Length: 315
Image (cartoon, rainbow, N blue to C red; front, side, top):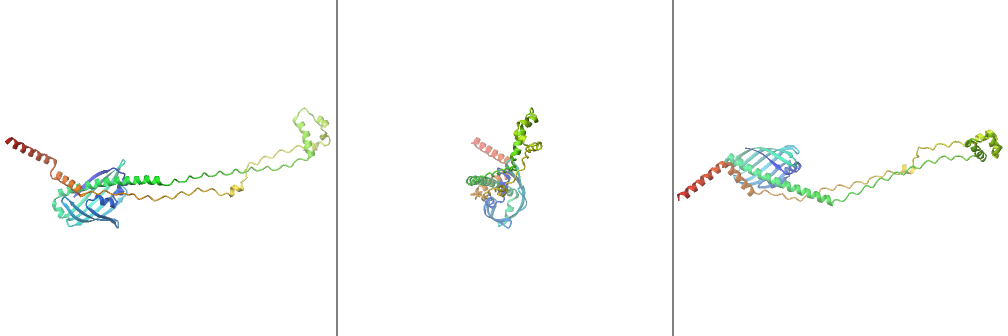
């Protein structure tokens, strides 16, 4: 039996992918599932089905292979019970469509035992109805779980303590300027000679003869002494800053350590189970539409209407 189709989920690819591997959600969307556990990398469960021609207790095992997260995987199903057995291989692919996710599935199943005696068309119709109801339940649970996680994230962010502000690093103290080397004061005689000689350099109208006759200090010195009394040129200031011992010895300030990240809070989520009564109604509609196509139903309704009119006219 071949079964293929697709379904559009109003959720992100990551949300749909994680839901497809959640035993709690899978158990809720499988009609009649009484137990589903993850054991040694595969799912093991018990299903009690009473939907149309498919009735009885089944024990199944599901293996997941060729996983390419979050794009595709292969699901191998092996279920057995009193009504017969089911072996199926399903290829599932996920693709993003904007903010939604399109899931495509292609299943090849083998059915044997009593349930195979009801006919191929009836089994295919029942399987399509069961898959459709399961996908509807999966969609509802994905939206509920996503809303629960978003609400929990908002509460966690609101209750988280504010991170302490990082104190600015103190600016390094400026290095003290290097004091210039002290210059020895000139001898009194030399200073006086320099003072006497200053007018001769600064005023061009004075001659040497005028200075000799008017300056008593100059009269007591010879010419070489006067010339050597000129003060030396000042030394240029040192521009290379000295390294402050206090600054070099002070260790660099360290930033405060970031607060530890708290673990995500638990999300209270109760999945919605798919009822077998809803699945039974869906199976009945699908079987009726399969065994009695719309054209056949319209023809039957017209025939019944003509019979009623004929009976009314006759009486």
